Length: 383
Image (cartoon, rainbow, N blue to C red; front, side, top):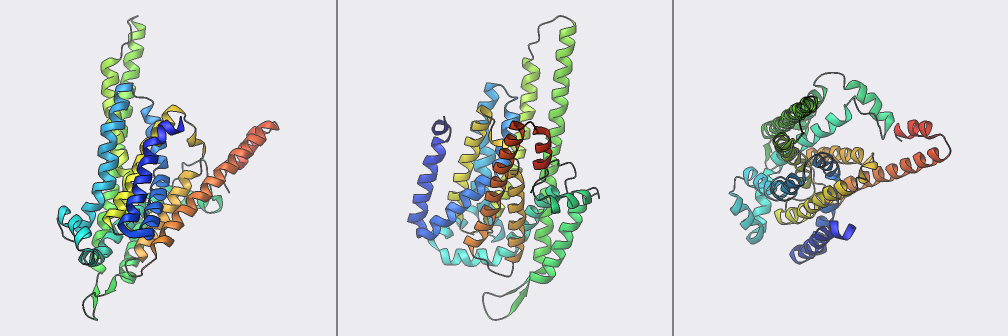
């Protein structure tokens, strides 16, 4: 069962890691491996949510999503989007950016280094908003690090708090880290305006993506409500309930909602990758491997529905996103080793996984001793 579901993912992983060795040796292998693990971990909740929605679709729409939908939202975002970001930031054409990365790596590195403050500010703010909206969410029932999550969740009652905090951090970053030593000569260049504009662009992008997701989610709820009302009306009249047209319309909005949701989830992994490397080839390999596992995890969850039991993984992924956002903002002026950057996220996610395992064991032990509800209340509060 596992081999059947993850077979293609394992094959792509092996090919990608071998290609990394040929491209840049063992250091490239390490970077691609870290990118792959990070992308898979950050996309875990994406697969869980996909699976929950996908179960509501009929076989035809499931197939459409797992083929065309994955190609558009997952591969398109994870493989094309990094090239677009580099091309726009370095003022290159997409083809020219790829050509330079292969044939003139020194010039490519120079252009990307010059463009790094704008990339880091854009990505750092986008990731920071994901983390802040999660940590200020007052509706979450389960807390992993309750000593910090509970007080911050209470603060989440203040409207637009995450946006205010993000803008304050952006202003501090622009004033603190935005003056960089110039590559050519010994002078300094003030990058504060670039950092501010790019950071605001990242914030706006997050709000637009979130708005689109909310729009399609509302449309989906409306269609499901109409479908339910139509079925109830048909039952009252004693008519057979076919639901073909209504199911088709509802499934269409499900598909659109999943596409927007996939795109928004893809942003964190793609932008987080820039905290680890600026090399398009290594990004494509690492994120491509991760994209395959998103599909495999989605299929597995639809068939088994078991991985969502690890409730703290979502917390670990969001803490990793928060750490990556801070690292990106720091790298506007200070260089941080790629392996250190990647390890922080992987360690946080590994700790959240282990906490989830311990929670499940405590729940099982509590149920066995007849104290299931008390045990559940205790472990659900987090670490």
